[in-house]
Amino acid sequence: MLPSELRNRIRNGEHQSHTSGVCQDYVQTNLVVLPKEYAFDFLLFTTRNPKSCPIVEVLEAGEFESTYGKGSDIRTDIPLYHVYEHGELVEKKTRIDDVWRDDFVTFLIGCSFTFESQLIKGEIPLRHIEENKNVAMYKTNIQTEKSGVFQGPMVVSMRPVPNHLVQKAADITSLFPKMHGAPVHIGDPTEIGIGDITRPDYGDFVGIKDGETPMFWACGVTPQAVALHAKIPFIMTHAPGHMFVTDWSNEEYLKEGK
Image (cartoon, rainbow, N blue to C red; front, side, top):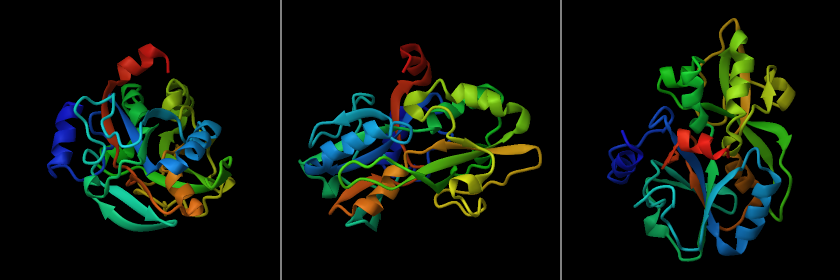
């Protein structure tokens, strides 16, 4: 399926689940939408925290078509959105065009789903894709660098990898710095504040077998954890695992050296 076909299916309500393993050869992004008055502080937050918030694109206030998706509409082309008010999750929506305002600024942030196709091509198994589950994500004790009202813990995604393939997985993902790049932690989850690996804060746990090592990558869900701390009047994001899929192929991304 081409990304444009997927976006149409999402817009028409035909695809309402996560996007892990979908359109695997194309770049996927996280979403943050907030009022213009907070946009500069958030942009500064992303530049200070590039591992968890690598910027792919910023749309002008009121705009909703990504240059990476012809005919796209970020208000309708993501399977599920989260709406926060004053730091509280108040609603989950399948489209946000009904609450759209001309002062909304959109940030598209790199997503680790992008490098998953390269891991698979490198014969590194990804159990959450094999089992059609969302990737497991956890809040950590790794603090982001503050900007204005934006601060809070880094969120990470976890994938169990066979011990002999750990270095290969790290090498492959390091080629995708705009998609979180190399892992931020490998091994013992308690070292980064994860007390119970079987209970992710977002997504689904898939088990860690003997001979496997948990690997942790910075995650674009971090802005959602930050939103809880910021308590700004209004902010919208993608629901964890439900991404905006662009027309930008992984091959094009790698050729551009970003």
